[in-house]
Image (cartoon, rainbow, N blue to C red; front, side, top):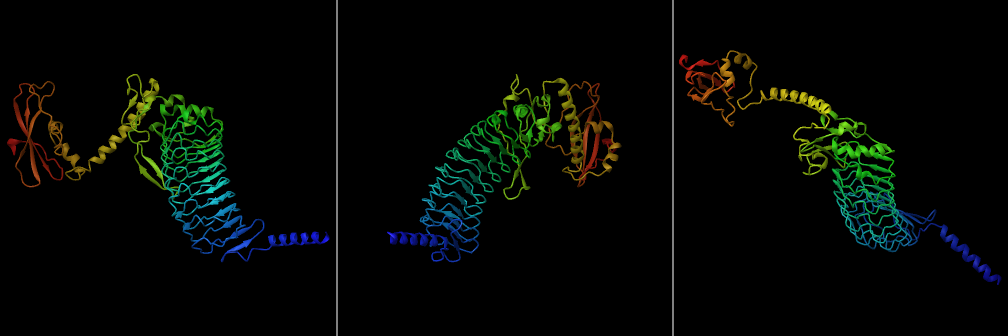
Amino acid sequence: MRTLISDGGRLLLVAMWLNLVPQTDSCPAKCVCYSEPRPTVACQQQGLFSIPTEIPVRSQRIFLQSNKLTVVRSTSFSSCHNLTVLWLYSNNISYIEAGAFYGLEKLEELDIGDNSNLRTISPTALRGLTKLHTLHLHRCGLSELPVGVFRGMFSLQYLYLQDNNILTLQDDTFLDLANLTYLYLHNNKIKIVTDNMFRGLISLDRLLLHQNRVIYVQPRAFSDLGKLKSLFLFFNNLTVLTGETMDPLVSLQYLRLNGNQWICDCRARTLWDWFKRFKGSSSELECSVPEFLTGKDLKRLKSEDLEGCVEMPQIQTNLFSSKTQSGKFASTETPLGDNIPRCCLGDNDKSSILSGKSRQITNNPQKEKENMSKTKHKEQERTKNETQNKQNDGPLGTLSNTLEKTLENLDPDLINNLESSTASNKKKKKCSKKPKSDTQCIKELKIVDAPDNDSTRCSDIYNGKDGKVSSTRCGRTTIGGILGKGKNKNER
């Protein structure tokens, strides 16, 4: 009996000793293996081109980051059933075989981030990871996520998809992720947030969508996000966001919507009303149009500021590069399509819309008068500047400052009635047979032969009383655009 007890004690001591001694015998070349705190294989920054094949079966953590790995095969970790942590970030991985992580039922953390050549991933590449709670797929050059790629990942809590080239997400992409709390999607190229994009994310706490190209959020996009506390949508191309879209976010505490181009007219009223009920923290929402509200915070506007409707056929938006936070590119997409917002349709359909200019029409006469006054003043200034600029941009060359002096010497009647020599495409105004108010009018223009670069414009001048020709006026014009002094044809 004593012998058996003694032998049992020895076996226990041997087992404990084997567990404490580093697994040097089966450790892959260029790697370091140790047992405490958990059996670990550390092979980071060793210049490896392929995943070692002699990884100890008992390994719970494998560190292979910052190497030159290119492929993850279906057999790479097939024997590591105890694996809980696998780091593969900062490699050159371009392909992950289907079922590459199948059988790793105990895996809790997988980091494949910063593999810019990955670009696509198999729908079944992550199949079987039912215990995974953290997944890194950031900076992988992904342009899309296949349907079902996250299927069965019921334990996932943290998903990092930022800094990719994702253009859109399929409906129900995250349907099985009922326990997901953090979703990072910033610095992508997403344009539309659809109704079913985030369906199933009933536990989501933080959603980061900033620095994308979002132009529109569909009305039911946030329907399942009742527990969401942080929503970042800053630096996108949003112009309108309805209060009905925001209503499901009953737990929201932190909201960032700055860096968009908000239309502050009747379309913003529901969002303005929602902010009156919102108790959390929010950034400013700088108005882009109408002009007299540009730069003002939508939340701080008065109710009467949001009356009427501004029609903007094209709004220039900023597309933020996924590579730099400050880079922007011009876009002239129409965010909401060609449909006229309901609030813009008055009793006579489009009667409440003012086309072409960023000016509001309201139901408040005093407010409308102020808006029209401000807009009229700006339009006058703009017209004045355009007129001055066009004087130096004509087909006949640059007009010199001496033109004004020359025109002072012309006959006033000639100046008032002669059309511009550059208006060949315009329809000539003909003289009425029975002039009523004008004492004289020009019947037609004739070009008289003249030397090169010089032509003479002549016109018959009719007497307003009897309709007979009283005289003929001619003006000399040169290629330089200088109109000579008008003379009677008989004097030339």
